[in-house]
Amino acid sequence: ESILNQTYQKLELILVDDKAILIDTGNIGSDYREKLTGYLEKLNITELEYFIATHPDSDHIGSAAYVVENYDINNVIMSPKEHTSKTYLNFISALEEKENINVINAQDKLGECIYVGELELKILGPIGDVEKLDNNNASVVIMARWGNTKVLLTGDAEKEAEDSIVGNYAAELDCDVLKVGHHGSHSSSQRSFIRYAKPEYAIISCGADNDYGHPHDETLSTLEYYNVEVHRTDLEGSIVVTKENEKITIKSEKSLQK
Image (cartoon, rainbow, N blue to C red):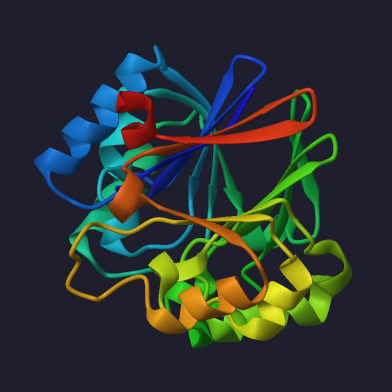
C-alpha cells in the first residue's frame, strides 16, 4: 500500500484501502495548482476522505479553496489558528459553501484517533492557546499508523510545538518515517524531539535552491547524529513511501526515471 506520497510542493497524500487523504496543497499560484491537480488526476483521485489543512500559511494552503470547490471531500481537519490572508479567507468561504463537508477542529480531537480502513490517524497537535502561537507552531501534527508502521506528520511545527508534543506524548512519538517539520529549518527537529521520535527515515519537503536555504545544516546534522536515512524533495523530486508485508520501501521521482 502507498502510505505516503510526498511531493516537492509541500503536500502529502496518503492512499489506503482505496481512500485518499490529502495533507495541504502546496503554494499559491496557478503553476502549483496545476501540479496538484495533475498529480491527483494521474492517480485517478476525485474524492478525498480527509483533507487536512495543517496551518493557514499560503505556502501550505495555496490551493485549499480550489480543492474544496472541485473535489468531493467528506471531512476536513484544520488548525483553529485563523489568518487574515486572502488565501485563508477564500478557503473558509469555500468551506462555508459546502454544507456536506464535516469540518473538524483539530484541537477538539487532540489525543484522539480517527480511522480510515486500516489507517489510524492520531492528532497530537496543536497544543495550547493557538492565539498565542505563531502559524507554524499551530500546525496540525498527526501520527499515522498502519499496523506496526508509523509515520509522524508535523506540518511546520517548530521548537515550541515540538516541546509541547514531547511533554504530552513522549512515549508515543517513536516512528518509522518522519515528515520533517518546517522544510528542514533549524527552528524544527530539535535533538530532544528526534530522540523521542527515533525515525528510521526522514523526508524533507523543500524546493530546489529555495530562498531560505532549507534544509539547514543543523537539521541535517541532528538527523545524521541519530542515524536517520534522509530523503529530500529538492534533490529527489516527489517521494513515495510504500509498505508491503511490513517492509517499507522509499522511491523517488528521479530514481523511478532511471
